[in-house]
Image (cartoon, rainbow, N blue to C red; front, side, top):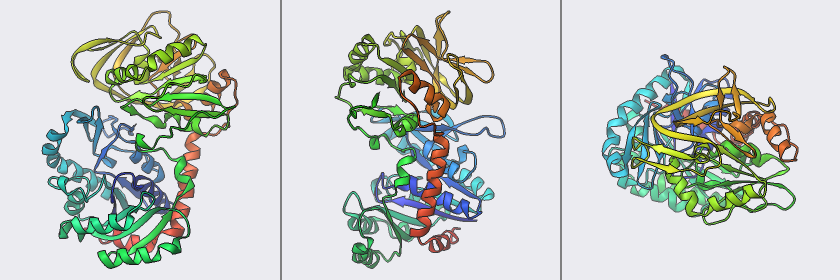
Length: 489
């Protein structure tokens, strides 16, 4: 069994996309490939396939995308440790798909070394079912202040005997210094795990960087495996981090759909399909900016911390904007945590998110929510009750929402259960991925007076993975990469 780990000189250098593209590349060559990320930090999570006991778990959505690239269902072993930030200093810890509590950063640093066994257990299980495991690091191995107890980068690579390819992002500048600097600060035994490097996000004539490649090779002793240009297919793939969300202003003449960027926004790829619609201008509203008055629909997105983000929403004045929007006849949709916010109250009686309290919601739907420690993880499909438009998605949330008798539900699942609520132009539900289905998306846009492109978002992403794989096959020294992977212990 072969394995290789892609680490980066920093965050957001394109590791997730390159792993996804390489997974599809080798899968297209007939290999059984599995993605693996020992530790991820993201509020963008996905529901996994059931395990042997029928339990579903959650992993980072980047690993779910990489599983799709491998043409295999996502499992908890692909991302055994997931941190879901709920504040600047704390996060919920998920191990093998299940919540294990909340930890402040300093406490987690002391605990993380104890998680190495769980990480190695998952890695070994993947090894037994694959010809090739492609591992994604987190952050950068150059963060030597975090090296003690590390399970995300060199700590894992050395424990598992997995060779490393280092990725540098030339678009942000200083790529020579970042690669050479990483070599300089690493412990010699860590540096010895690196067998080559890739340059990512190059613009222009690649021949102009020949001297740069030579300089990196001379200072580090690592061979270059290729220079990857900006790849348009990558823009179709779901983003891993909220920092890359587009905050462009509304386009005149297009239907404006606005999504306030909550501080702890989660599962924001819910809106990718809308962003591709030619008649839609999707505006991700950044903090400090008002919700556009011309918006026909405002969507309150999912969030890792509903009460904290409700406070954040009010601090931006978005609650006032929403009242004005509704008064003008605008529509509002809440998804997951956004759905909870639309109700009258949110009760956190057990201190799930913070101090035990009951807070007032926005009062736009006749619902009340009680947060619970148990997390609901399920894949769902069904139809909109109003028009029969189909959908397929997933739920991933803590909390139970009670809807007033007589209120019209928004969705009906295939098993006959209902979800959500709709009252006039205000609606909400727990289902993520609602707009990926072309029927469901077309129905929403028809209510707003525009047509849809009719493209299934899942098919669009799958095609982008094939395009990405084909491009990487022409750019990356694939034979050298496989030779490196075959040296894994």
